Image (tube, rainbow over all chains, first blue to last red; front, side, top):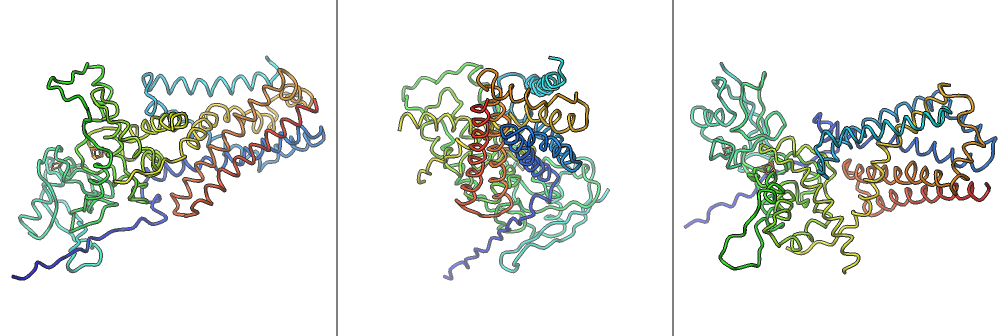
Length: 129
Length: 237
Length: 126
Ligand code: SF4
Ligand code: FES
């Protein structure tokens, strides 16, 4: 009796480096992950600001001038939108990981937090508080 | 009405990689992808290989990629597609023949998390449970082991040792069950780098799950559990 | 099945999550005021007055506001960002192994320490 021929040639496809370009869902995921790149830029701004503030009045004024350069404002505008996109995704994930209250309530609550922080800072620096 | 299916064929005895083949099938509003595959097999090409059984989205065997997205063939209808429809074997798994995937990795991963009730109480009376206790895990208990979530998960594609959505969801399902005492046995698997920590919350698994289990949520609830276990581990080595 | 070793990921994940909250709740307001409204002249000229900001961050309440700003506005977001960079490298199949991890969390730690140091310098000068 002849042995059955052993066929063991399953085809295994390999992911390529650009796998995330293949589908809108993956692109959105990568966009979410990439929000940290402009965030790193803003962190750099804050860190230099902190340095200038403790250093001297002149370097603080230099930092303020740096923050007012058009390309810095432009990059920070991008960071602002990145932070909002991150916030949207983060707030929506949170109730799924820790389902304490109904999801819409938790999402609204978190946006309220972001809004009040922004408002508080604006009022504080605007001299209203 | 007629539609064209472009099927990725693979014959392990002849081919080195899959190649597309076009088939035109008659269809109406109730024709599923599985119906179309059965038509092709019965009328056009008896060598076409694919899995199916229940035809009602409960056995979990008919998973295929439809236009690049993991779907159950029996729950996907030609009416929802305008142009040609491409059908391939499930992504990230090895293809044995045509649309038949080798699911053995998936089964090994399922096994690893001990997806069954572990209870040392051997007395014969039933383990009672209140509706509230049931509600804690009920959502995660409807898995039909179709493996679609693995085809949607790039982390599994990048690292086949990652236990993956369904296995981690099942672990969470039993860990949340008031009748179960096996959490301590499951946590070591979850705590590893190929356990819950292999996940980056891409979330596509929850989109494709035909039973709306939200596996991504279960995996990330598992992260909270694993982090708690980590802290406990510091104090109790 | 052998038992896998426990991952140290809970530490980085906890920092990542805390940083994610800061990135979502605090950072938009900070950018809006410091980096957009003030440079565009939408806030009063003296809104970022040197002496005033120093007092808020380094003097009032033992510099507590400064510490909160450093922690929630810099350290935690840095760990959040570098955690995503670390996993992003894996996603893009840049296999840096253990070095990638050292690089990512090392730089986040270093910059965090630096930020705390600047705050401490400001504190002791005020
Ligand atoms: S979790 Fe959903 S997609 Fe994954 S195997 Fe179970 S039923 Fe299928
Ligand atoms: S044939 Fe059973 S799920 Fe599709």
